[in-house]
Amino acid sequence: MEEFYIPSNGKGSLHCGMWKPAAAPKAVVQLVHGIAEHIARYDDFARFLTERGYLVVADDHMGHGGSIGPDGVQGYFCGGWLSAAADEKSLHDRAAAMYPGIPYIILGHSMGSFLLRTYLYTYPDALSGAIISGTGWQPPLAISAGLALCRAEARRLGETGVSPLLVRMMFGSYNRGFDKTRKNDWLTSVSPVVDAYNADPLCGFDATVGLTRDMLTGIQMNENPENLARMEKSLPVLFVSGGKDPVGAQSAGVLQTIDAFKRAGMKNIAIHIYPEGRHEMLNESNRAEVYADILAWLEKWT
Image 1 (tube, rainbow, N blue to C red):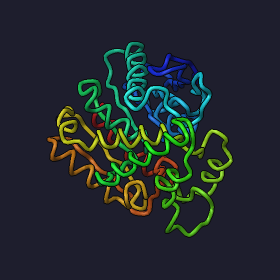
Image 2: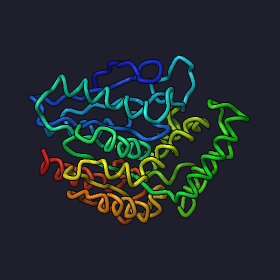
Image 3: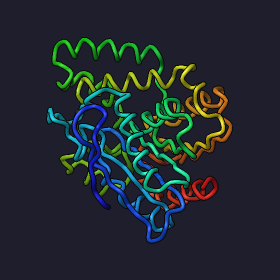
């Protein structure tokens, strides 16, 4: 991975990485990671793609990995949700300028999937395709209640404070229903991956009040039918999810999202839901199958 930095649209600089194939790339795949993680966790998948002719780029979101802004706060967007989406567009523009005239795909996982969904109606003509991984759907009343609590906690703790109450509300139920008792077993059934995540100081931290508010705001925007209607109707979209992923409500939230896309007029939707999979399908026990399925979709549209 070649490392570089670009200015954030909020504050500070974004730590970025680029994985290059041996020959001229057939397409660019940009990866948008989830909350409380960083791009180095995608190295295996990125190498898989480069070995098959794709160029891969990614950035650490502000407040994640190597992108800690001038305030030094982990788990905080300096500038809000739309600024984070604009950061992805800045990386997109840089990579597209370096490799013009070839297809450009974005894969967004978890929080990155919600950022990608914002991207699709904010920049509707920008992409050749989108891969939405580990996404979900939230009831409007739950979002409104969460935002009200964020406002109250921001008054009490400040935007960069951490609210145990909000953390429990957002993530507290995710580990229920799994046999193991370690923290974050909901991510994947592969124990070494969970162990590595739990041992990584750049993973698993608690989101600030501001980031929780920003993410809920983004989810609320994404579920607005007027925004959904702004997406490019012919854009190929692949949904990837585990059937046991709590973020997707054990696939119910994923299917609700797909239904909303279809009602908005999206014409080229593909779906891979893996019944035994948890949240991180790129790190699951059947990841070879998942990699192959994503590659087959990429080969179709690039």
